[in-house]
Length: 370
Length: 246
Image (cartoon, rainbow over all chains, first blue to last red; front, top):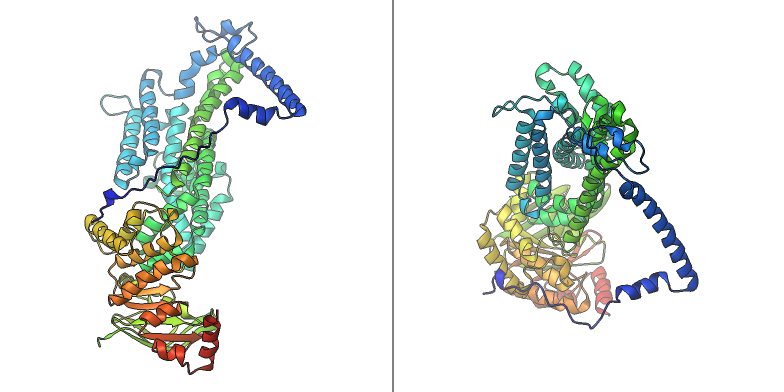
């Protein structure tokens, strides 16, 4: 009998004798094919080199990297970048107003949260049990470390959390709560019961037509008046749920578009096999919908990461607001450019990793693996 | 002969105000092989899609394996597990391997243990002569291979009735035979089959009864030899002359 393990699925590639060009040949063909072509290439390269040289001159060659005495005096008469501000003030940017002596907790919490996000990107964790265990462990670790009150750690209320740690936590919590909400909204909007689908549609359109700022304001400041005390919770959780709702409204439409691009025959085949609604949805429709909707989903995740900076308006010091605070003292106020470049680099690292991960997922799914 | 596997009485179906099926009466005995033919738009696909309720009927009654089809969703899912269907466009699940396509429904809907479901799947994949493709994805197979996987997938649920909705219409000519061969084998094994097809050779070879439909009605039915060689109705004659003339 033929068993599964006998089956050969990877035929050997044929040797066609085709040799790709070397680097030199390709450069010649692309940039120096004709004299005019060559001239444009040379001028372009010269301009590029000139700009890169100037940027490097400022950022590296003439830059000051550290301040031995802790003051801004080292940067007084220089023509380059004053990276000493980062060396002196990085703790504020990364940890915000978290008590200085306890910042190791914020650091560990941030690492735990980033590790949770990175690990859940690995296919090995894509089983409901593994993923939920991972996320529970990640959030509990984060919360215990940040809030303290256990194992002799001082209590630090969420109002004092800040910096990169707060940004990462806010983002992870918002997406983690928002994604299931988005799936639920997308499915409810497709309901065959007109009342359900219309009401869901109204909710999605309603949330989408409000600016994120008003939603965050409402969650932070209005809900305490209208909700009973026991339902209010901490401000940070109300804001996270508002943020998650905003994310979910957009993501729900992305998922719905993914569902609509699946051929009708898929659902019919699943029905004809006697699969129940939940099995059809969970095993046939949603996996394909997410795959179809992967590029806009990554897009939405990227936008959402950058939108976390809006929480500053309701009094939370995310990484951007902490950056403002870092140069806000009179001493370093001239060095705002360097601080913003540093903050921008941090954003870039996160967002660029995310989009590279999206590209990896697309490659991986091309052959149908999941 | 055994009891009726399918019994349709006085069934009417409408899309809005447009009537697509008109006073359908049809009894299918267990083990019977029926070919439904007719011009495009005659309602033949709609008819067999009513049997597993991919389409709902508005009037009349349909009984499948002793259960009436109505709004009871539990009943419908139950019936669908016993009524396999093979589609014109295969409708394999592209994100699952061939093997997973075959084991998904048995493990989820019938709660068969995974090892047992895989063993059954390999048996049927061997029967449709593509066990070596088990770990590939549907997109890596030819149309004829995909349709044979679709047949294996339906068989893995051990259905009592198999519905075929133009199973060879989307295939390149050289692949039609490999699918028809599998269907002939199934028919010879005594499977109850309803098959919408234009393959008259197949109908002659295996059908117990051929049903000719036009404009939502069953116009004529009979043994293949009678219906093809000596059609009584004018519409049947016209259709057959068009199909057989090329």
